[in-house]
Amino acid sequence: MSSYIPEDVLRNILESVNIRQVIGEYIPLKKNGRNWIGLCPFHPDKDPSFSVSEEKQLFHCFGCGQSGDVFKFLMKMQGMNFVEAVKVLANRYGITIPERPRSYLDQKRHTETEELVGLNLTAATLYHENLLHSPAAIDARAYLERRGLKSDIISRFKLGWANDLWDGLINHLKAEGLSLDKAEKAGLLVSKKNGKGYYDRFRGRLIFPIFDRSGKVVALGGRVIKEGHPKYLNSPETPVYNKSRVLYGLSQNKGAIRRAGKGYVVEGYMDLLALAQSDIDQVVATLGTALTEDHVKQLRGLCKDWILVFDGDDAGVKAALRALPFFYKLNLRVRVLNLPAEDDPDSFIRREGKKAWSALIDKAASGLDFAIQQGLASYGKDPEGKFRTTENVLSILQFVNDPVRKSLLVGHVAQRLGLREESLWARVTGCGNTTIRAQTEHGESAGIKNSKGLENRAEAKLISFLLGRPKYMDIFWDAGLDLWIEVPSLRNLWMAMSHLYSMSGNLNLSDLYDQLEPVPELRTLAIRLSENFAPFEDMEEEVLSDLKRYCKDRLNKVLRWNVLEQIKAPAEVSDDEELLKQLLQLR
Image 1 (cartoon, rainbow, N blue to C red):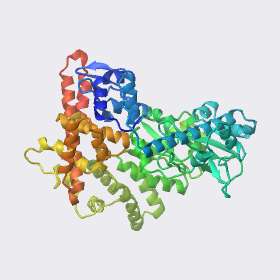
Image 2: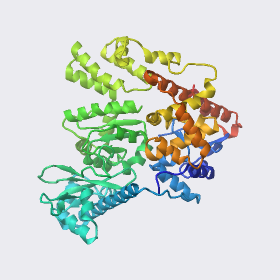
Image 3: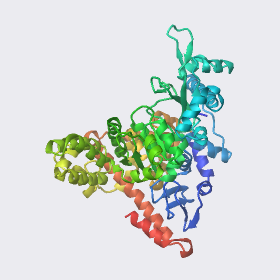
Image 4: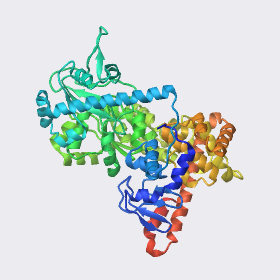
């Protein structure tokens, strides 16, 4: 199926679906005024804070802020991408998704991707069978038993064993009639130096299949169990595997992370597996590379609270410090667990157990406090040491986008380091004023002025801004615009933009125009608004700040109205105390 779905088909699906029925299959819902409420499936929820509107076909959680249409619900609940969610609902309601002819290059890439993923699965299956049944894997089975890994973990993560042969996989692929050239491109085989033939990349190693988010085997990792170098060996990067975008364990553990409402990031396979063996499943691991912004963007969709648990040595501390800016930039809450210098998560959990782990987690410092602690420990507490620590902390603070959060964090850092807050603000803003606080207090800036008719023009201005600056879709995509845009044509255009961004991860205008071909009035509107976009030059950041604040105000306004409507409902179908609590949260 094409990755681009015509907008009229998407609208047909949305018109056919009853969001309350779909969500009701996952969580119990009860009638509450005009809406339905239940416990939120995306964060730990004791009082029903999850609301579903049949009238608008939207959901919203007053606890964690998640909101959207039925596509977004399935994406978050099942870990699907947008196209997968559309396909599930189309099949359910008997709606045909027309095939869009692929170009020759697109078809070639699609076919190659399927072949490489299939070869990785074939290899993983062979190695898994080896571990379970091969006499040559007896030492590997004994090693896993000594490490405390039981059969359920071995099966769940499909661990394997590559026999110590140069052609074990080659012979299996030949017997299956599969291409050795493609297996080399998948990273499973290595070309001989003389150019004549191949040999197995993985030999005499425990095998850790690496799954992408959707559960496809995209690479393998291998570990020696005796003497050997390198200790760990991963597949090279291939057309289906980019280590800077894939996290080990994400496919298996994403559900546990959502249920727990928090997750851990560790550095290796064995760290994650040891925690899983102790029934700690809300964990992902990096794959021999530093944590990247692409990694953290994937984590953002699972929960808000993350704890970095890297090795206790200098390398682990540096890795944690490098990762912190990504979490603050994406408005996530991050803490760092400082393990003893001689420990990693694997050794600690096996020696001390789950109870000691939980006690240690409770002591994990916030990301900023960790950076301050490490800076003072490394540079000293004298003025020069504090100055160098401040430099490190500023490299994190500069990425905080929310002005209120930034203000609170600046005050906290100033107090911890004994600095004048005004001096720290001057460094944060890059100039000798308090621009950020002024915007927070006065609610406006040079980018967008309060003027007559702004309310009527603001929605179009926002859409025009995003068409002209599609790089900001990442900020606004999940900001609840579908809940409050009132002009039907603008709301439909926003939904089309949102659908395209969900499918492809970016907003390409030519692709948007193609998608809107069946809806000419929306296509014309999109073209007109994109042409009307006026560059803001040096005021772009101020305009962005104003638009974000405007979106938040509009979202809170519509949510307050929604709660007030529920309060007006008959007493037997509404919980006034809970609704008043929600109303206070939106003040």
